[in-house]
Image 1: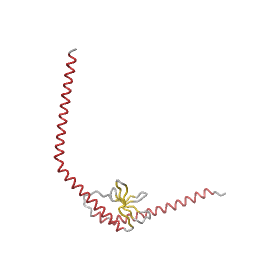
Image 2: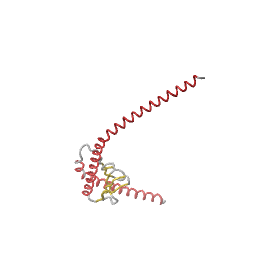
Image 3: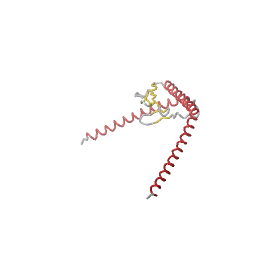
Image 4: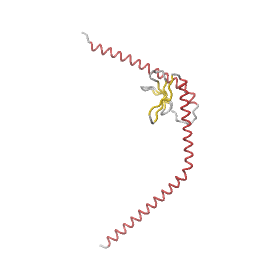
Length: 175
C-alpha cells in the first residue's frame, strides 16, 4: 500500500533539514568573519585610554550575529554574507556608517568612530567642569533663597493658624 502523504512529509522534512544545515553553515561563516574583524580591532582597542568604559566590544550569536562596538554601534554582515556593514542606532533610526568587503576598511571606519566618540567624551567632560564653576554661586544663592521662602511660608501658615484659633475661641466664648 502506498502512502503518498507520508512520503511527501518525509521528503519535506529532509529538505527542511538540508536548508537548516545550510543556514547553520552560513551563520558559522558570518561568525568567523566577525571574529576576524574582532581580532583585527584588537590593536585599536588596546590604545583606548584606561578608565574609558564607553566601549563594550563583543560578538552576539543570535539569529543575526553582530560585533558590538558600544551600546549603539555594531557590525553585521550584509545580505551576501561577505560584506561588512557598520551600523549605528540614532534617535532618527539606523545609520550605515560604512560598508565594505575589506576588513582593513572596516577597521579604519571603526577607528574613526572610536576617535569621534573619545573627542565627544572629552568635550562633555570639559563642558561639565566649566559649567560647574559658573553655576555654583547661582545654585547656592537659589538654595538659600528657596530655604528662606520656605521659612517665611511656614511662619505665615503658623500665624494664620494661631489667628484662626483665636477667632474660633472668641466666637465660642460669646455663646
